Image (cartoon, rainbow, N blue to C red; front, top):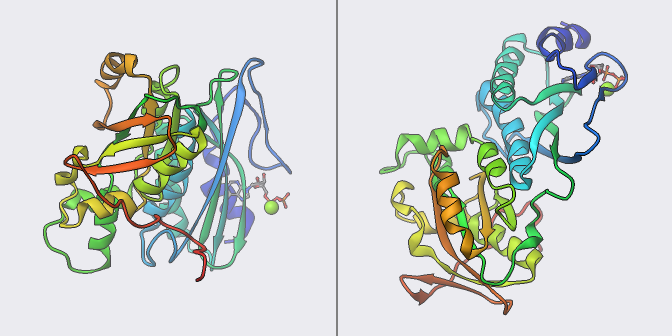
Amino acid sequence: MDEFALIERFFASRVADRADIRLGIGDDAAVTRCDSDTELVIATDTIVEGTHFLPGTSAHAIGHRCLAVNLSDLAAMGAEPRWCTLSLTMPDVDPDWVDAFANGFFALAERYGVALIGGDTVRGSLAVTVTVHGCVAPGAAIRRGGARAGDLIYVTGVPGQAAAGLRVLRGPTAGIAADAVEKFTYPEPRVAEGLGLRGLATAMIDVSDGLAVDTTRLLAASELGATLELGKLPLDAVGADDALALALTGGDDYELCFCIPPECEAELVRRSAGWACQVTRIGATRPEREITWLWEGRPCDAGGAGFEHFPARP
Ligand code: ADP
Ligand code: MG
């Protein structure tokens, strides 16, 4: 099967027929139509075999993952997903593999109304780059840097669970629940939750490299410090002896960490009632730029720097 037949069979034939897509796959570029009073929010992420997923991962799960990690970035901005492109680098063309990949990709794309409008298909070591485009009302994107002193800090879901699932995939482990493997293999981007936080969250980040480093990034962008109570995290659901370390530095959670003004707590409770995941208050920001991690009221070391692709050498 040549490149054009492959693109036609697995991708072009599945492009949504939508008024906001003037020109989809097949020309030199795609053309989309934006509403006059919206801002475009754009994110891109690459996943590479051996770095972001284990060799032998199913094509369906890779198709899901390449889009999920990108939708997570849009979710963290409070943006509504609209269009995406897909650059697929693979060692050879196995139609069954591409079929399963496309099924994983489109199952998630259809769930969140994001249309594939173009891409690239080349030979090489297995890697996938997706670029997503979403929309927000003017000025409404939720940045990392908007928190104010005294804001409450929350995290969605069960941080650390994905890292526990990865551990199970790497070798025999006891005590970790099967849903942890599902959580690592099929991360669910918190798109509905991110949209639900519009007009409420003052700052937000998606937790992809571990709660410690990503919370620190949000606080740094907001030029604030915080007091965080780690005992509040839902660690029992992680199921590992070192659940706290996995939550803080494990990565791959694709949860949302966000801040709200204290007077908005009741509104958050109201809005989050219908969410698919739990939400946990883990602390509050403060004006001095110091982060204090507490465990049952006592200072502790949040340790580690989270996942780092190019760690500094000593
Ligand atoms: P060009 O040489 O102009 O870059 P390509 O041959 O790379 O064109 O692609 C032809 C068309 O197919 C373009 O519209 C491109 O966006 C689309 N395309 C290529 N690969 C993919 C893919 N993996 N997924 C979706 N669209 C793709
Ligand atoms: Mg091309």
